Length: 191
Image (cartoon, rainbow, N blue to C red; front, side, top):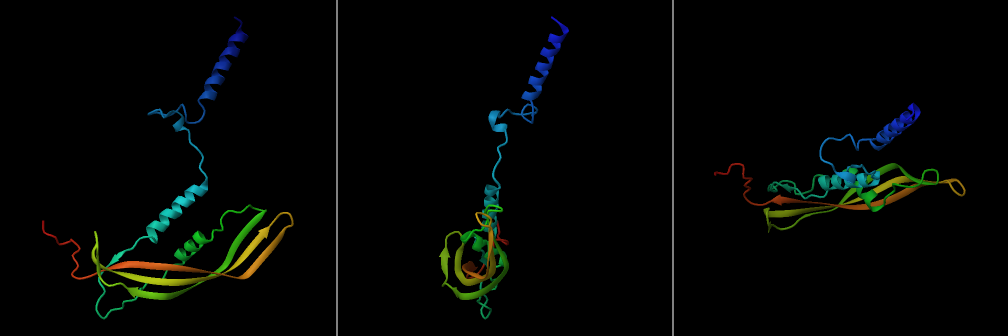
């Protein structure tokens, strides 16, 4: 065998080994997952949707249990919806994300939010399983959103449409429980 053939066979073997072990597939230590060890690209849309669902669940989709209403104290809801809550409810009802750059894009600018409480009432006391005797406090808000909508179309004839008097109305409900009667938080329980 000539020196040239051995060198060609050796270089072919080295090339085959180096090409088969690229990336992190052959260099891992631990259990072999087979084809499941290869990372799969995931669209950012799914990650953002999961993060938004978690944010809404964590912040706005739970009914807290507050202390009892003090006789003679205010029996009105003290917390109107935040601007973040209004914008997230608006995006959920009328999504704007997406579009095709340079072909079709929409923007919302100069946003102003007006929040009006339209109802605030408390249900009579009742017993809710796993909670105990409580009253449900309802607060309904009408949120009017004033904004400028800019639509840019890039094909077939490029043009921009500006609507400076756009408005949307979003209704948001804030419900929470108030404890009723002697409150036992369990902190001073005797065992």
